[in-house]
Amino acid sequence: MCYAIPGKILKIEGKLATIDYFGENRTAAALDIIPKHGEYVYAQGGVIVKIVPEKQALESLKEWENVFQELKKIDEQTAKTDETKFTREIRQAIHKANNSIPLSEQEIIGLLKTEDSKLETLLKAANAARQKQQGNACCVHAIIEFSNNCKNNCAYCGIRRENTQIKRYRMSVEEIIARADYAVNKLGFKALALQSGEDEYYDEEKLVEIVKGIKAKCGALIMLSIGEASIETYEKLFQAGAHAALLRFETSNKKMYEQMHCTSFENRIKCLKELKRIGFLVATGALIGLPGQTNEDIARDIALARELEPDVHSFGPFIPHGQTPLASERKPSLQQALKIIAAIRLSTPNAKILVTTALETLASNAREKALASGASSLMLDATPEKYKQLYELYPGKTTAHAKIEEEVIKTIKLLKTIGRAPTDLG
Ligand code: SAH
Image (cartoon, rainbow, N blue to C red; front, side, top):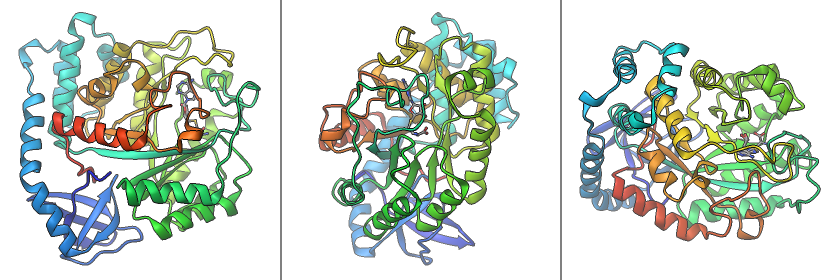
């Protein structure tokens, strides 16, 4: 967002740049924008997205300098914990994290079984682990939901093929590019997710046109969330300039996966591995609270995410939608969702963990709570207002009627209050 700090290039080695932020060094990939030593850049999600003219960078840095130190102090303060209250499981998780030993699934289950009376302690421990690993770095993505047409029929999803009650829409190529332009060049976002159902109307040619059109106008990380496109298409899209992909494996339980989808679990995992091989930054994760899901399943989800080594972890609650076969199921509680975020943080300490938009439907303060329980990144809905409400994967979308301009102001205010700074670089 306009919440971004320019950093100075200290070193470029191959595709890896070392960037200075007020004396703190971070790394980011130089994929298609290759800055020179001493130049200023914006980076987001671990990728350099724009070279910033020196004069503009210095003016911005002057404004940021004091704020940056102040934010760090606030975050350090809020991350203080009383270690004497830690349970045996938390203590063990922290010991292993400090020694880079992965937690076993049994140990993750131990965390997931934390009693209600110890939940706050678990969440605080996760927040402290986040602070220790990543400082106060955060990343705010915008998401543009460009089509709610889908050829698939996922049992939980409100835009599934068999939902005949929904009004379908598609944004034109020009509309998508114009909206991206607005999100990046007017609102200041530096990372942009483009999401849709699996909609064959957008063939490879159209998708490449969209990515190239956005790239030509915007200095931003483009993240695709379009489902299982072919590997050849993903390769072309990477070459066109999209460097991140969001594709959840939804559940690590193969039987459950195949009951809910018309596609195979193996194919999904294969697709995720191919995305990584191509060079995409990958965001993945699972749905929390699916009917019949056990703590063992969730521990396996967390372990699978860790094995896949994604750049971003995206775990969100399942919210039952009235026009799906799972209409009468229950959604998980905010406490359950926070517990899982904390368990991800403690078992994968260096993870970037996204607060998903679905999680925000569980309570009005869910975003803030998740950021204080181990999560580090956010996603704001920048879909044009006339389409937003139609993109109904689940009901009760908190931002269905919110104006993105107001959301940006609200979010910056929240991040300043809790001491987070936009230096999420990898
Ligand atoms: N078609 C793309 C992206 C759209 S769906 C894809 O398949 O990846 C984006 C995500 O929304 C899915 O990965 C799923 O985890 C989530 N989702 C769908 N229905 C949901 C529901 N009822 N509650 C919560 N999340 C849901």
